Structures are given as structure tokens and as C-alpha cells.
Image (cartoon, rainbow, N blue to C red; front, side):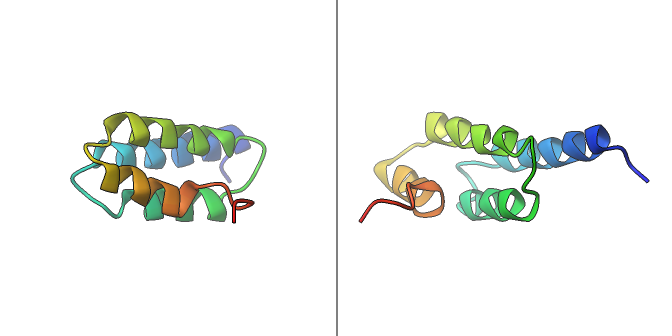
Length: 77
């Protein structure tokens, strides 16, 4: 059985792999959100931080909008 530390490391590595595919793959914000939602825990903020990398690497307003679709504030109306 993997330790919690090992599990967190593997999840973060998966998130990093996804981020490297952005912005060529427009599926990355959704896939990153899926990874985040399926692996909630004390270190889920590490996956959430990867969205900052997506924003920094965005090449257009459409990219930023796509990120917001999956990662925007749920409380906004």
C-alpha cells in the first residue's frame, strides 16, 4: 500500500503532466479539474495551484475563458 505522501506525489506528477500539455490541448482544464475532484484531501491545493500555470501559459482570451469554465468561482452569478 502506498503512503499518503507517495499518493500525493503521484497525483501532483499527474497534474504537472497535464499542465505541460497546455495550451495545445484544450482538454487540460477539464482533466485537471477531474483530477482535483477525484483526489480531494489535505494537499489538493497543490492541484489547484496548477491552474495558475494554466493562466500564465494561456495564449488567448478564449484560453482564459476555458480555464474559468472549469475553475471559476462557483459563487459568482
